[in-house]
Image (cartoon, rainbow, N blue to C red; front, side):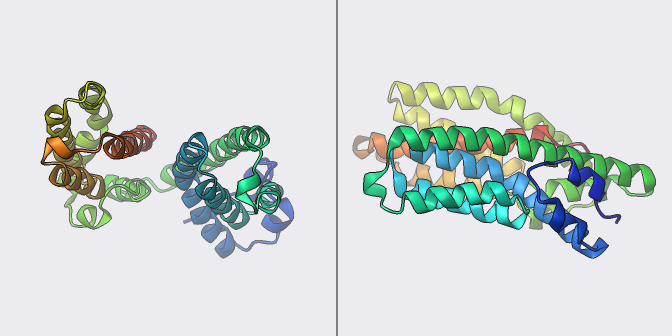
Length: 264
């Protein structure tokens, strides 16, 4: 496996070129994995931070800013990491946070990071294309497993046990999931909006089955757990169930985005 091109990384102005230029080939290979992990983690970090901020729940907001700061340090986006550090220092006392001022920082940082990770993804995609072109012997199964391993919701152990022909069928089923989940997601939203909890649980059951079929086992298990917890509709706490519904819908949205970005 060839390392990333240093020249392609220099073009990403948010990365510290001085650190990249000193990397050996082995360092670059490790750095490529770090960049890949950072790209995959960002949608989760952004979603959780923005959710917490919308609720003015500042303690987790600071924790997610810290998580982003740590990731930025790992990929050597040093100036952006320092900006996060300033906010963490400024708002050590969460009881005195200025909401509008913090919002300005979050809005700016999220858009900046979105552009950064888009640029990184472009470099990673170009590198993968070069590798496939240079190594036509790389099998479909190998490419599929490498890309599918980046989707954290999918059970990697199950994929490892699949034979090549099974993997082809699985990739086809996976690619159909985003479109097929639209009606399921809308059904769940509609049922919850009118507080038809019996219908909500039925739609969660449908989503559980669909998620299990694509081996998104963790999300499927969480749906199953909510169905079991809320089997008595008369005592359901609407606000608590709403937290889960919002979480599962956003998780499915992130999963669908990751599936849509696959190039197998």
